[in-house]
Length: 202
Image (cartoon, rainbow, N blue to C red; front, side, top):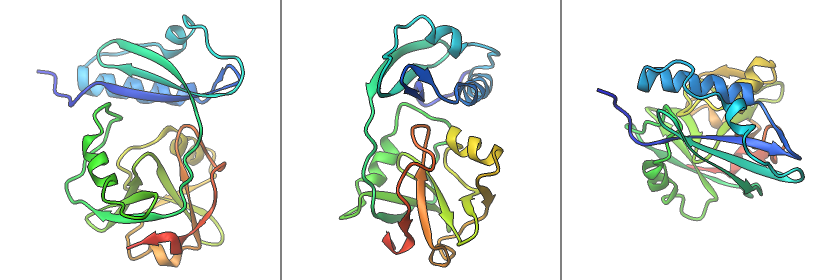
């Protein structure tokens, strides 16, 4: 019996007609379809996306929805959210190992952000992710990403492979020892603002 919560998503950066880091999205999609559906090489993103007429100028999020097969593709004009503060939310039961279309649990946590722009989700004392992004911390010498993300993002993996960031355990008690943080996802790498850790509200 196939067990899965809902359909899945890949959010791919499309800039001036060029897809970015498509290889990383393909790797993740292949791992997901093998684990959840016992299917190998079920969807070839490059081949499927070549069937579409894509915008040639501007920044777009290419939103691919799939399960055992490709369900839909859409191109959404992208503007990054202005995140300047995070509210720490503890949840020992949160799970988001795969990029599911159903984000109701994360939305529930996001709605607890109070006056902050986003949430920083903590599980069993360890820092995980924000609602739409992984997080990286700067200690004055290097950038660190927690070893306990809810979702292993494609940008996170790209930066790890490029040795731009390091992975290590980060507890909520460790956070004040860092100088700043940035949020990263498929649409943004080091492009986002560097924010002081004092903007993380316990």
